[in-house]
Amino acid sequence: MAHFPPSFLDEVLSRTDIVELISRHVQLKKSGSNFMGLCPFHHEKSPSFSVSADKQLYYCFGCGKGGGSFQFLMEHDGYSFPESVEYLAEKAGMEVPESAAPDADEQARRKQALVLLEKVANQFSRVLASNEGSEGLEYFHRRKLPDELIRRYRLGFAPPGYGFLSRSIGNDEHSLAQLEAVGMMFKGDRGYADRFRARVMFPIRDRRGQVVGFGGRILDQGEPKYLNSPETSFFHKSDLLYGFSEHRDEIRKRKLLLVVEGYMDVLGLAAHGLPVGLAPLGTAISERQLREILRLDDAPVFCFDGDRAGRQAAWRALERMLPVLDAEHGPRFLYLPDGEDPDSLVQTEGADAFVRRIENEAKPVLKTWLDGLKFLAGSGPEGRARMAKKADAMLAVMKDDYLKQAWRQEAENDTGLTLKSQAAVDKKPRPKISSISPSIPNQEKFIAALLQKATRIGKLLSEKNKFLLDDDGLNLIYTRVLELAAAGNGIVQSLLLEFPQEERIPLWVSQSDISDEEYEKLLLLMQERFFHRLMKKAGSLEETERCRIQWDEIRQKLEKVGH
Ligand SMILES: [Zn+2]
Image (cartoon, rainbow, N blue to C red; front, side, top):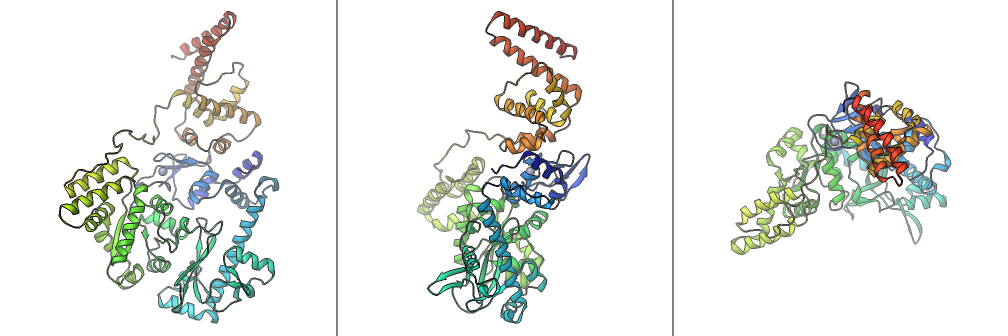
């Protein structure tokens, strides 16, 4: 983790408004002293995602995700910690201290590369709008993409022949080497050459909306039909989805996500009022992409051609999906009529009919699985046996035990055979993610009370009876709270950074306020336990006696407050 001075981080946060930051993605409504909205991290129908302007924190009472502005950018937009700091610093008009970034070279290279790709994207769009690109523009118009959409998705054209990029970006050695590094040129026998020629261009953006690569479709009959940027340190095909940064918010709002095959399907749907399509980048869909998809929507629709190849592709997607499936998600599979793709279909029948088609025809993943098994196994007793075997093998990779059990029962009903792998189904009931529980143990409650009111910590620092907590993990946080307060640093935000695994911190701060009266009692309880422990451990009679006096004192106070 890059080391930013705490005072710098404090300053960045003090100039950032988390409500504004989050409301760009989540519709927030004022509710009491907080803002509430639908959680962007899990699927829900009524809001349990809260954002506090005073505390500059978000917390979801449904799934337990929480943090401050840095954490939101990291969780939601996939920023690294230094990137999130830089982003917010820049927004606040602050300079990032030079010494703060240990990978300064790497960061600088990445930044330069992104700036360059941005320039390249602009050049391609410029050409598309000029005479030189008329062929490309005609293609998009033929595919019924309106000009407004062409601009919004920054579509472009790479002219035929070599030398376009060196002419428009620069032909000095440095520029050429940079263009090669970002995958836009390659070095052949006769020097640098443009990778994309005579192609309409689709800029591919990462989660932050930055252009990280391109897809290009050839206009004549040449091969390959689609060409993508090669893998670089920031362009990983299996991590990215075309349309993600453009459609993420719309998908959440409409609760509709269509996974389609190609760029033109994504754009065709958007042109007809369905900006909810995502496509892998010409490769089979990866487990990472599937996770991303399921995070966005609980019932995404995977569209496939109705022909044999389409059904095979659907089966492969289903197989890949099994390890990431859980009972909370119900992906659906839609087979399109012969010879149609989502783009052509939405053009002929319109968006409403297409959405109705999804409602009527999309098959739940379980049904797709059972049908696929039956088809693969064939008929007769041998077929049933083959089906059972295949089902067993596929169930073995599923991680959600309850879902696995449910699917097994369905497959047993269909085959009339008992499936073998009764793997650890009943053994470990999963710990349910706790929504706010009133019975937070006292030590946690004590820390929560401290975090909720800084004056309590101030008083503790001047207290003569210093004490520790029983629980080692909590003690670590507690002592850090005292240190941070003594150093005058922002406490909650620092804790979030120092204990990134500790999911309870935002929960403690976001739960209902702990009254002063209750806090006094908690404080005494903590002290009571501490001195009791000290007394038991004391090495000499004298020491034991000293501890007993303190312990008695505290117990008397506790009695007074009615404990
Ligand atoms: Zn949530």
